[in-house]
Image 1 (tube, rainbow, N blue to C red):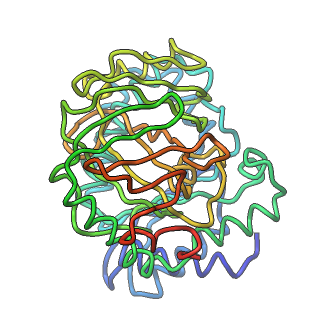
Image 2: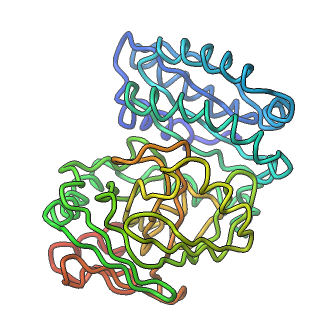
Length: 366
């Protein structure tokens, strides 16, 4: 792909998302062949006087390794990857998905081994010691999953990724302020009535565009032990090689005690990964005005306007090997929904209804 928008995205990512400085080292991880992006990202890093290092990965190769590898292999893999990442100041991943189902036939126990050590690498080293950002590549397969032409998807992709995130961050601070003074949250929607506490869990800073592109969310942990009720997710989720639909989770004192989906067995295998997988690591509200419908890709869907995600697994004060951003849309087309903060209705059918937050409604963000 030869497109001037790639250079802009690369520049914005290196200068804003990871705030790359002269003399710093950045590891660029490129998946499934996206050399046109890599070239521009290398140039953008060099333009600020940084040192780019590139590693190329492939899902088909990874699948082959997963099918044969034992825990001893993954320990050695982790040691090698950790040593390389410890030598970096920043990390940028560009992921081009040729086949969303590439890992569909990898046995659960084999996938769990890979996930254990990959999670250790990224959740413990990357997330807390490096500046980092994850991006997608606008491939024909992504266009197909989103039911659009390749050209239309590319236009959408660059628009959603290259909005003014500095401005969006400034606006999103209003939601941080409201969440920061909130204790009890209640979510009501078709099949959903759940309460939990976020008291003291929301930082007074917004990170739109820093860790993910596209972005457009305010997220936080929840107070462990406070989630009670049921949530039914109305957006499909590709996770670990399986497409999940109709996921429904019931909580008692913060723990998922009942879970069903189109593949209930596989769902519960994932939730049994470790004790933290049955607790919530993140509650987040999505408001990217240009993401108006699900794309069947979590990195996009969790930022969709009028959405929220309630994430089993790692995050906030909940350690786990998994982090699964399951999404619920409150767009009236999906049945609507309500978010209540301390018995005050703050968002109805995806639209903020308190004056302090109306700035985050779609018409005010474009």
